Length: 562
Image 1 (spheres, helix red, strand yellow):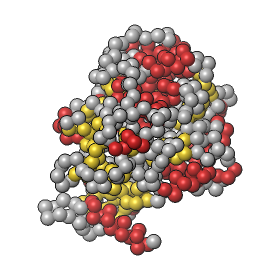
Image 2 (cartoon, one colour):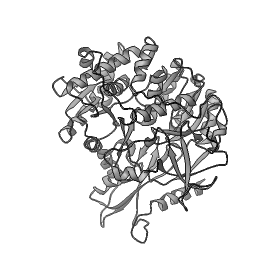
Image 3 (cartoon, one colour):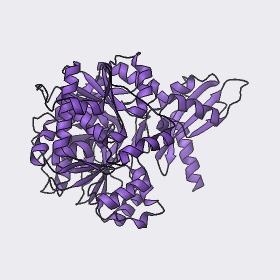
Image 4 (tube, one colour):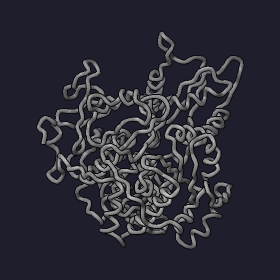
């Protein structure tokens, strides 16, 4: 134990301060669980269950098919799926085949999808039938050659698999009929045709990238975070060590956090595969569906985001459901209000603590202890093998306890860099440290606290939203002269996206007009909830718009209203 790291004294004896990170590729843990727990349930999905052996064999089948299509080691494969069995099978199938997974948000519109596919150079994409028309539109504009298509019904039990297409048609007013051919491939046909083995690919766990996780970082368009096999294995091992009371092969994890988000991918999918836990998957968040799933499936682990816990606590029928199976939850993606933490613990009898991380760190770096001391308002202490310091904003040196500065992190979970962006990589990786862009401090006992974000990133309902991307869309509107987008305080979502617009002279516009325009070009979670029309925007002497001044205005309004 490093005595210079003052948080070390807070570690219980059950958590090793330094873990031995296994030098294995990430997919090897599915192989191991298939051997250790062949007949145990790996996935429960709307009544359908798959064993670890079944998930393993189906992953190998997909990997084999990709190799036969010509996939070479290191080529990128996009996965554009909600949480469903196919998302897990696709993820591990790509890794078995030697490819790099590119997680793609299924809410992306054509513009966003086109950018990501061009940036990563993916030739293959695995997606839903409902999203096929969207993917088809961008195929000719990108390097995509092969589209593998699946549907929610493909992994539903009888009779739900028969009824689901009718529900889908009613809900989405869309029926997609797809035929298997040279460039379009049906997931169900692959599972019937392919053989459950792959040509083994040699993996350098420290250097070979397993995942491109797109994030906005500090500014600009999304960047592909290169996470190696070692990065992901290390963070998953850390997660398992932190939850030391959880028994291998015995736990049930509620898989509500989307796997296309690195937090859900690590704390639900990879952890469950590594430790032989059962995953209860939900394709989207609905408070009533979630409460029913907890009541029936009795999950013991529930990683989530504050907006999820708030929605459940405020559901009118909350008292009708038994949530007592929940033992522990680590909350991420946004600050966890203390009153939410206390109410949820009282409702479940379990433990809910706040953690911290970012895509560039696979993602978790800090967390409060689950069964020992936790400090209100703190993001906790660094995880095993992880070092963290505060860099003084004034001196650029290591700050003293309780002094504000930028949080910096080092550890085996820190990314290799940004895909194809050396300059951006060098800006955040310095002398072995990842500069997070978050402002905070460490107290005299080694607990860390976040005060503000250096970045302009908005976190609304657990989604990372980048103002510049929305501003670029709004600037394309013919009536806009100037615009700035900011995250303003929201008691439910953490933050809400607000657009401040200066219209061109002698034109009029409505909020509805801009809302319709944004919905055509942006995923729903990025669309501003509030539009304010102004005659001018606050600026510096050199003409830079003062986004922070607008946020401060909103905070003052909220303060006065209360």
